[in-house]
Length: 84
Image (tube, rainbow, N blue to C red; front, side):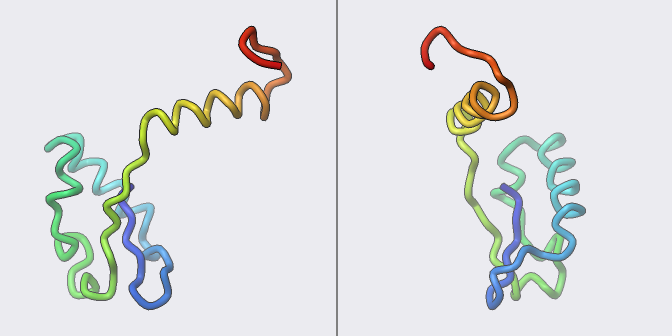
């Protein structure tokens, strides 16, 4: 998850959306490892020392499971053969 959190406040970088778009371009060109190899200073410049680069990942099974749960129990009023 390409986030930079401010070391003192824990807040996301104010340009998070722009930074995510730039990281997405790099991942498309260089593969998923582009984020992990990226030096924060390449995107943040002099601000880099004020932010922590987050290396968390969103597991595909978690994503799939939460989507499944939401569709069945959240936004759609449908049943499922394996549950209530």
